[in-house]
Image 1: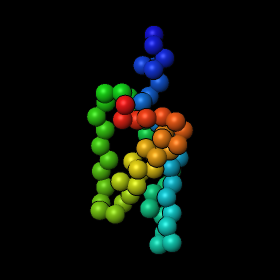
Image 2: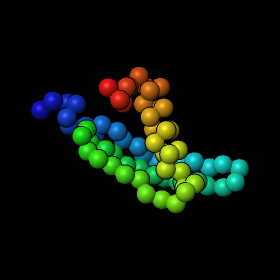
Image 3: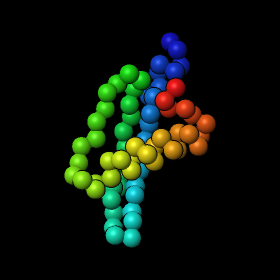
Image 4: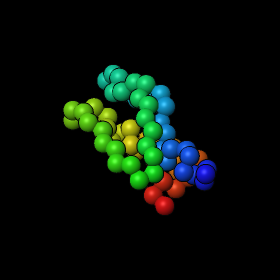
Length: 68
């Protein structure tokens, strides 16, 4: 089997975001397979966008191109 098909397209483990105002999210983990639809639900200001931006920026810094 093709190695790219075996591993998840995006993996996040133990993501935490703390600001001077307090904890936004803590110990968030998830994986998304290529072609899978995934949604994050939460109140306004709960860190949904921050989780996705952090993960995408980390992938880019590791040399991955998540939108290819």
